[in-house]
Length: 104
Image (cartoon, rainbow, N blue to C red; front, side):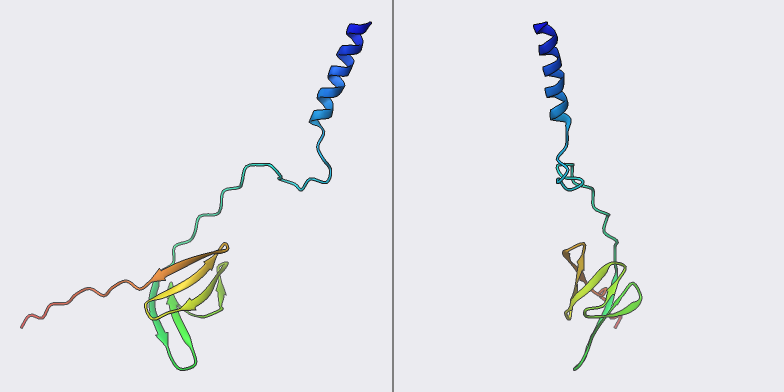
């Protein structure tokens, strides 16, 4: 009889451990999900005037504060553009122009 009682208590205890807290958020304690790979962008040129700053990214003119493809243009500088992508700041830099030699 005691053995049966101990077996029943052991099974009940093991099932109690398997119960989940109904107030726990979904995914709590799970391994973090892999982030979506960042898309590559190409900075072609930067135009800075008295009242506006424009950067040509992937062939399209973008202004500060503009959002495209889930990315926000944070700040446009003379030589680089700061983007906010998935909460992180990314920097696009202008590629240096190739050196051209004079044939004279």
